[in-house]
Image (cartoon, rainbow, N blue to C red; front, side):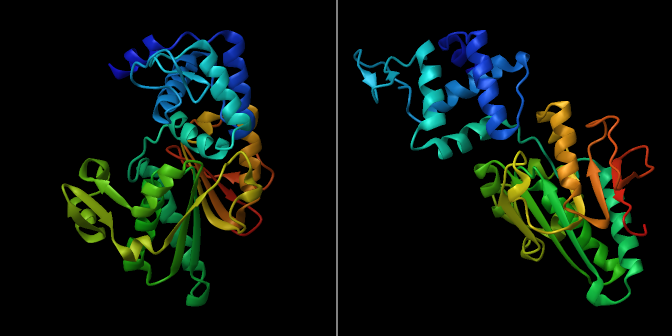
Amino acid sequence: MGEAIVLRQAPDMGAAEFARWQKLIEVRTGIHLPDHRKAFLMLALSARMRESGQVEKTVGHGGSADGLFKADGLIQEDDYNAYFVSLRDGAQAAFEWACLIDLLTVHETRFFRHPESFDLVRSYVRNVLTQHADSRQRSIQAWSVGCSTGEEVYSLALAMHELQTDTGPFYFGVTGTDISYPALASAREGIYHLRRLIGLSDEQRERHFQAVGDDYYQVMPAVRQRTCFVQGNVHDLRHAPNQLFDIIYCQNLLIYFQTERRRELLSQLVEHLRPGGMLVLAPGEVLRWHHSALTRIQNKQCLAYSHRSSKP
């Protein structure tokens, strides 16, 4: 209902104006907004302009807000342009981008979202550890690309933490990156409402989480200390973690990009994959993609590749 009210107050965005926003967002973030997402963009822009106070929420006296935006609570056509200019050239542009992108990306995730992929991760880790009997070489580094509010990172960490019961101790670390500062702040806390713990058994919740009140639970320190969260834009992987990973886990992120850009990003991710490492994607997220350094892992339920520069 709130969405209908916001959109009724916002004038329709013309085709040329929408195309200008599409281009700016794609150049800055790589995110492509198809034409049918125009109403979604209008909703995000109007919400952010009100939230930041650039459009007054209450009826004024005919004056202006900050010399740019109307004070009557209604978004006008010129407001889209004024906000566009503030994002491009304003003193608070970096902060505004972070807030707007948080509205444009959907943080829908949960623990062990695709169980089959996590089963594949467990199998891969067991195989790696079997090859290295020397405890000094028993180490796994994983990277969750587009980690949102952290459920994927903690799922990877939990899977490896639990494997130690069968395999013996080994070192592991999980790095999560995301473009959204608010999502990362939530991820670092590792606190989730009970309804967000879907995908975990009661036994897992009791072993790996501590109750913090009002049906909220926090990931235990033993698992949290194996994680690291870093802000980063997948559109600019020059600033990605400067290391090679045994596992790169990238699911439900490529949907934001056009086909050719998806392929470019995947090729760049491969450069961060250790020889013998594994790249895990969401089933159906990319079609007919090949890379000379990768071999598709034969698993009907998963989409994953192994780096064949080393023995499997």
